[in-house]
Image 1 (tube, rainbow, N blue to C red):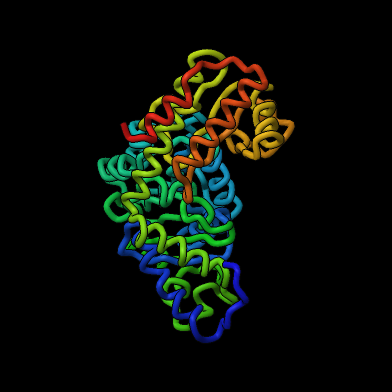
Image 2 (image 1 turned 30 degrees about the horizontal axis):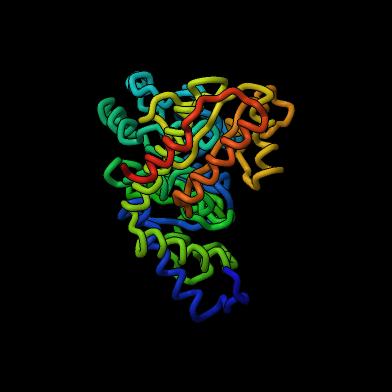
Length: 374
């Protein structure tokens, strides 16, 4: 990315951008289409809604944590009737509850089911294949729309095989590029829903972006030039150097190393993983509960003394939130190896000791054993 601004009318940039499309689709495991946007995850929340829904349409949000509520609120501001089933901050979607809601919709009023694969704040991971199974068993024709912003390139995603109609992602997590680009992947069923829309914003419309006649149509104007250079390298690293399946396995191994450490730390004291069941945890992020004021104390100690920045808990953005001081998160996504993970865990261990926060022993031994593959 550290290079002079390129020619945006002819030459290398234009040729290179065309190579991104097939590789992005390989990451999502789809034969469908992809549209690229200049914007963060919220941008493709709105873009995904704008292409297939109209004011008054009814949709169902299956929410685990925080970010599904944000997506639902955006839908409401577009005039969509967003119905929410909230599964809390410590669990994933209950398939039977979802299936009942779909079965009860005898008139087929629900146009789409929307779910976040991994909630970044809580680290809850819903198994998308189970969502599609519930929809099929309910014989419901709704679109399945999935937010994979936190997990694409970290946790497994099989868009076509799992029956996802619309998938959204960002460039800054598993795809390892600084924030600023986002993506919508969509299949033929989603395109047919787009056909029925009478009005679609000229900027959010995915058609010219997915089927550009001219280079500027990829981005409805000037391209995010240096992000494209970074994205090309990131896709090469994932697909052509390491391999996507190997990337998934690496994230799984390193996540288990982190969890092994917390299993030891949590024997004594306040530390507790937010998601109790292993098969419901993301391989991209881990959310930890430890009660106030320990969360803030540990975050600040690590920032000031170890050069390690831990995330605040549960997607909170208000410093006055009473839960702010009782949580932290570890992001373990993208360009990550054992050295980084063990270093972070060592810093946390030092912080727990320095602050005299009660904790069990043997965490680093447990994590290093997992990293060793023994």
